[in-house]
Every structure is written in C-alpha cells, then in structure tokens.
Length: 277
Image 1 (cartoon, rainbow, N blue to C red):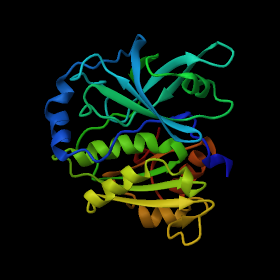
Image 2 (image 1 turned 90 degrees about the vertical axis):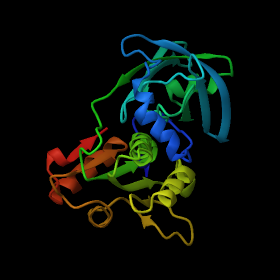
Image 3 (image 1 turned 180 degrees about the horizontal axis):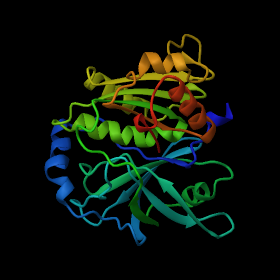
Image 4 (image 1 turned 120 degrees about the vertical axis):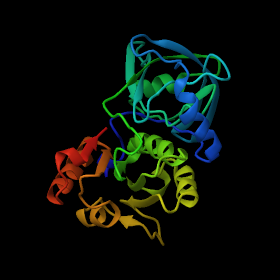
C-alpha cells in the first residue's frame, strides 16, 4: 500500500481540463512564441492569489504571472523547482510539475497534497493569499515534439499523474497532434484519485485518442476498474504493444517504478521504448 501513497514529489499540479480546443490552438500557434515568466537559472517570485481547500490534506494554489497575458513558459513534460521554509525555518526546495499549459494565460496552478512530515508541505500549509512563492525552471529531461510517437502508454501512481496529465492535455488540445494516449492510473483508495474529473472529461471529449484505466489497491464496493497492483496483464491489455513508434512513460513511487520497469522489460519493451519521469 505504501508505495502508492507518495510519488517522490509532494505536489500535484492541476489545471482545468475542460479548456476549449480553440484555447489549445492559441497556445500552439501563439503561446509558445511568448517569453516565459520563469527563469531556469534564478528563482523568481510569484504571488499566491487563490487558495482552495479540496480535502483534509489537499489544496489548490493559484499563482499570478506578471500580466494577464503572461505565460509560465514550461515546455511540455518539464517541471519547476519551488523554494520555501520547513517547520524549522530551514530552506527547502522541491520539484513540481504544473499541468497548466501556456494556453492558461496569466496564472499557473498547483494542487498540493500536504504530508505531516513533508518539508515543503509545511510551507504550503502556512501560505496565505498575498504570499509569494520562489520558482525556478523549466527543468527536466523529457522533451516532447508532435509526432515523435504514434502512441504513448502511461503508467502513473499517486501524484505521479502530474506529468502524465500535462503531456496528455497538451497532445489532445493540439488540433495538429494525432498521437493516442493509453493511461493506467493506480491509487490506494478511490478518494486518492487525483484529477479524476479532469481525466474523465478528457476521455469523454477525445474517446478515440485517450483511454484511461484506473487501478485501486482498496476498491469500494461495485468497483469496475482494476484491483491490486498494476500487473503485466493490465499493461498488455491497456497499453500499446511494443513497437518502434510507441513509448511507455512511467511516474510513481520508487518501488512502483522499479516494478513497472521489470514488467515492461519482460513484455518486450526496449529501453528506448520507456521513459521514467
């Protein structure tokens, strides 16, 4: 159970998925040309303008960019570093993957799952509207280009959904991108599923290009999705078969990542067909 409860990072970035295709088109044709508000070498300050509690340990934080037309400037699949203070007043820096795209003008959002002992969790717990967050980026090894693969398989656990959601939304909202996405998303309980409303909306809007399969370790009565841990049979059924023009992305807690890598190896996916966030 424990390996599904954390993802190596403490946060989940969130953006409303029900954005019109037109907004995505603006991003792909105009937004990418705008200078980003973040800096890969230096921390910049962004003001918290909205904080909304979603559950006992999850809250959504919206940060304003310099102007209403500003973009964060985060390439698809990459992340930022945020700097704050832990409960002892010491500096803490953690990576986060916002799922906002540059079609989301003037702001970016993070949904933070706050753990009792998390150093950055403490910082976010204490943040109030009007406070500032130090951000540096973009960072990351993943670089997406339209048409680089025919299809993506994705295996996510817990808050590892963040980069998957970012990449999926960018693909689906780009009218020129025909890539298909097959996502397996594992959690402990139904209540742990993050971004479910947004993911389900994408699946309804793009049924021919996006499929999602939920897996729960402790499912409720009447659950129709997967049960237990992600298995080789689940991957065979819900991910594209090994081929030169597909790739399987994975992001989850270290034990899950290790198990999924072994499954993929056994199923014939080469190292070039796999990528771990």
